[in-house]
Image (cartoon, rainbow, N blue to C red; front, side):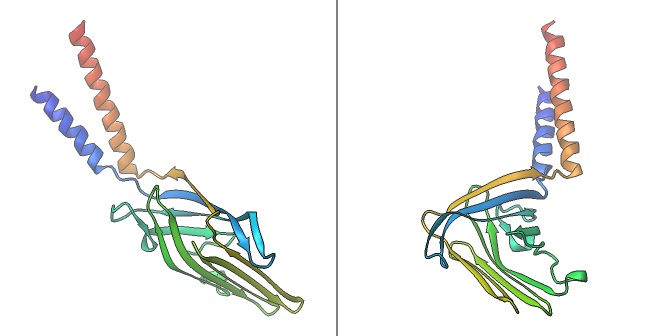
Amino acid sequence: MFGRFISAAALAFCTAAAQAGPIEFKFSYTGFFDKEADRFDPAAVIAGSFIADDVNRDGLFGANELISFKHNGSNDYIGCGVGDQYYWKCTIERFGYRIGGPLKFSTTWSISDVGYQINSSTITGEEYVYLYRSAGGVQTRGLIWTGQTAFAISQVNAVPEPVSLALMALGAAAIGVARMRRRRRAA
C-alpha cells in the first residue's frame, strides 16, 4: 500500500515538474475587404508563424515571451534592425495569444534604401496597410478585417525541454515496472 502511494507521488511530481517549453504556431487570416478594389476578397490572406514560451506559466503567450515572430513573408520581428539588417526597422506594439482563443498583435515595419521605401502595419481585427514607394511610382494595399475574416492557427511542434523528456521517460519506466509487478502477482 505504501509503495503505491510513493509511486503515485513520484508520478505526480514528474507531471508537475514537466514544462512545455517553446512552442511554434502557424496562423492565417483569410478573407478581407480590399480597400483598393473596393470589395470583399475571400482569397486575401495574412499568414505567419511565431515561437513563444509561456515562461510565467499563466496560459497566455505575451510579447515578452516571443522567441520569433514573422508574417506576410517578413523577416523575423525579433532582433530586427541589428547586424546586416540595420536598414530594416520593426516593432511589435502588442501581442497576445491563449491556446483556443484569438491571436492579437499590432506590428509595424519599414525598409528604406536609396531607391525605395516600404512601410507596413498590421492591427489584427482592424487593418493591414502596405505602401511601396520608388522612382517608378507608388503601390499600396489595404485590407480590412470583416465578420467574414476567418482565423486559423495550428501548433507546429512543442519543443520539449531535456528535463521534460527525462521526466516522461521516468514516468514511462514507472508504469512499466508497475505492470510487471501486477503480472507477477497475477501469475
